[in-house]
Image 1 (cartoon, rainbow, N blue to C red):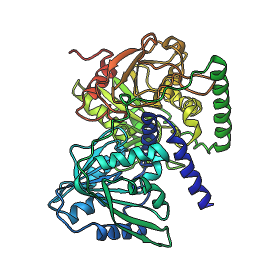
Image 2 (image 1 turned 135 degrees about the horizontal axis):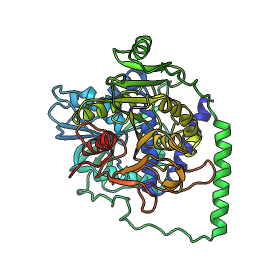
Image 3 (image 1 turned 60 degrees about the vertical axis):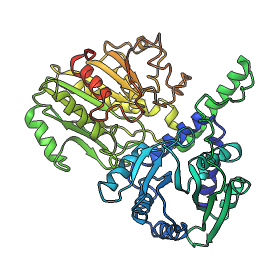
Image 4 (image 1 turned 45 degrees about the vertical axis):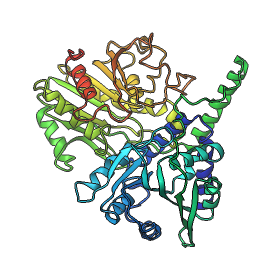
Length: 513
């Protein structure tokens, strides 16, 4: 069974590599963001196999002076920190496609002497600054698939190398032979060592190349400027058949992969000061205030930041996919951190605002077929709506909803609710074709950054897809400029987007320029 799962894993990523390069990168980013919803998902920090492999890799790095070192797909920086320790005079940098991983890597590195630096980066379409004397790439090339896409990734790695630089690759053996065959045929690279290890956990090899040519020119980032083959034209009949087939496959996959749903969190009997305090005492965790808390499944929690009993306004923050109790404070869009950031920002506009970080539903996982349906959103809306309805009537209620959470919020306010403003950021859609379809008195605000790669397919077939892009002309939302923000950056403390979002949530208007 483990071998079957291993093969299916490889096959799935080979299939993903057939997508256009930008879409391939988006899928990989979503996958790794989901995997990093919990710290160190592959146990790179503690697994004896991994720790031994780090030491073996360090032994096979040629002994010379390195000025700049790059660790590609560094995860949470376990090996990058070792490189910084092994080469204290070098500038060591780790890059990874997952922003969550980079946030953790940066925190773990701290300000220690010889600490490594980290950046979120997709090597398919982006490049680090300058070139490097030593480039490390471990357990990564499987995700590139085969053929042209694998060649593209390898050529990108080569473009990061200065003349005379060293490239160290660490992958499963004997699969490494297949992964590296394009490098073996490259006249600008010379293989200087290959060291297979028949480890009982999983055989691997450390392979070392030296750049013997001139500085390589980076292939054009495949973000739209590079020429691509035009897709074959297809008529309405072919498109309909493809859509029906896709919907049927998704329905079958969803039914087959359906997962258990955690029980709904109970709400306090009343929202008086005493009832709230009793509830906070019951769920006391880390000295914080929770309306409810459960560790069932991936965990759920509803945190209150501020004085809800005396508040005049309340902001309810609803997160998107891949969230869990373990990652409650993990990244800017996680419910705990987002709620505290919103409250701190609201305090600059005056007193009287409380924020609720609401993780009261089973957020869909990026590896689960339900991620492309509204079914988790329907379940979530059924749990969010009672909270909204039971909040005291004198409160001015706003919803701030990130990514898939925007689908949850839209379904919670549909048909009428006491919510005054619905603010969606990085939304894939609201499950409707236009804002008026929600039949809600709430004002709908939509923000999308130019660097946000959230998939907005515009598809809506039964439960599949999320409808029109809410920032497009004609949808009917009040569009707010998201600047150059990435998908996970809207609620980052100190950001312009956080200030804008909070101003709308508190005052119902845009911030004056």
